[in-house]
Amino acid sequence: MSLPRVLTLMGSGETAPTMVSTHRRLAARLEPSPGRVRANVTAAVLDTPYGFQENAPELAERAVTYFAESIDVDLAVAGLTRIIGADGLAVERGLETLRRSDYLFAGPGSPTYAVEQWRDSAVPGVLRSKLDRGGVVVFASAAALTIGVATVPVYEIYKCGHEPFWAEGLDLLSTIGIDATVIPHYDNAEGGHHDTRFCYLGERRLIAMEAMLPDRAWVLGIDEHTGLIIDIDAGSAEVTGNGGVTLRVDGQSRHHPSGSVLDLEVLTDRDAVAVSIGGISASASTPIDSERSANTEQRSPSDPSPSDAVATSLGEEADRADAAFTAALAAGDATSATAVMLSLEQAIWAWSADTLQSDETDRARQVLRSMVTRLGDAAVGGLADPRSVVGPLIETLLELRASARTERRFETSDLIRDRLDAHGVEVRDTADGAEWDLRA
Image (cartoon, rainbow, N blue to C red; front, side):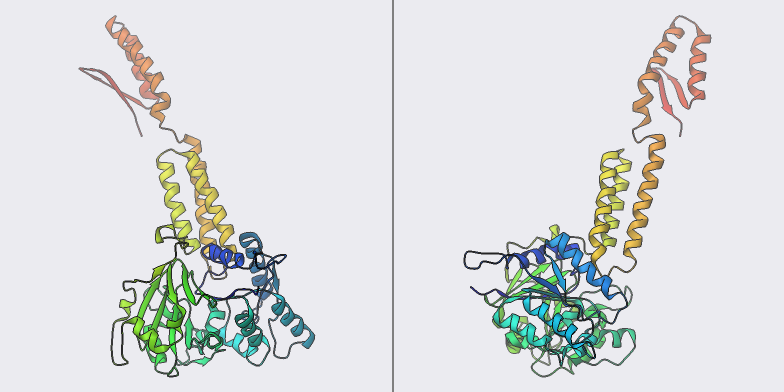
């Protein structure tokens, strides 16, 4: 029996904890089954998108480590950081690695660099072969940008200030009948006060670029830490992860949250996509904020509910840990405080393979160091309520003082009170007897 034909597009988080369950599900599709006997899963990372970067070997090694430790899959590195002008034998060896792998993965970098290197090479043919004959292809972030009819030149527009334009895409989606341009990082919010949604384009530029698309094309938006698993054989597309997928035609959108299962036939016809959005026409206008509309698709029982979603960044993990640690210290719970520290340390390790963390690793380490310092300070004075520790002793002394007062041994009574006061214990005589408290 042939391998399953699966194309998965990820908006981001391709080597983060958020996508571990998705990668595992995909790898499991390639394991031995009653109709198919295989020794193990063969997988490779296509390293072209970040091949121009000086740290390309480090990024490849991060992917290898992530797949080995989180997915339990050995990942080969294609070594195709550059194809144009590269040694012919090295290129052929890289292509052979791709051909022999049942699981092909590509991720961050520059989409325009990747397309330039791949366009006149054998890479698109290898990818089409996987989609035609069997295999799992996972394209994320920059790689996902390349796979449609057009490509967002994100570096050129967002970083270099070029006027909005489309670069030529590989148009590999047309292999399965989808005439779309893929936009990952669709819900990006890094800009804070300025709009960085739609892979850093923002609404104004995306609207301008939509008018430049070929007539047959539409926009397939994929949120960060989200995947769209397109099962070609089953004719379905399932949304996984923490966000959702947006179908957009002529500025009109419909958002499909995690767990949604779409009919692949809908995605293969622009008019059907438009109808699924709500029977829109080119002249209709609906605000972008309406994208998060109600959804009635079938939901996959295997997908986690929003409440079970993994944190979408190491910074979010650090914030949660800091709050939990503070609460544990306030409750005098050293065991829970220690557990939170260990959990954050594990999170820092788990997120170390993510290529888009910026300064969040340093921030998380600062939070962890703060926890160590605070727990050390707490250890000096102890986390337990001091009243519970010294209370029995003070109560015993106050009983002796009460006996001395009853026997009119006032010197002894005053001596006990004065000694307690010297050690921070305030004693107050009331009609109901002596009361005490610890001074701050």
